[in-house]
Image 1 (cartoon, rainbow, N blue to C red):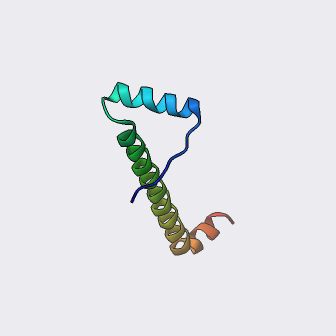
Image 2 (cartoon, rainbow, N blue to C red):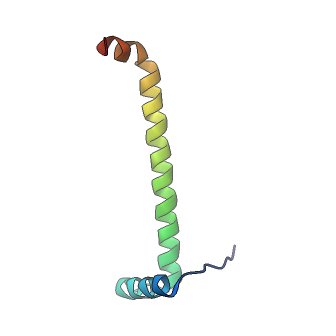
Length: 67
């Protein structure tokens, strides 16, 4: 799927410099950034779900510890 990414001049220059330093195209640098953004969000969601599960399963013990 194609899309247009609009960047400010400073964002585009920063992306160009970073991509050049990495030896990759600006497109590949942007695609990597998107993959990292998605992976971090998915990780955060998994951690939140796991924490909610622990809190639910251990609610009685946590309540007693708070007394």
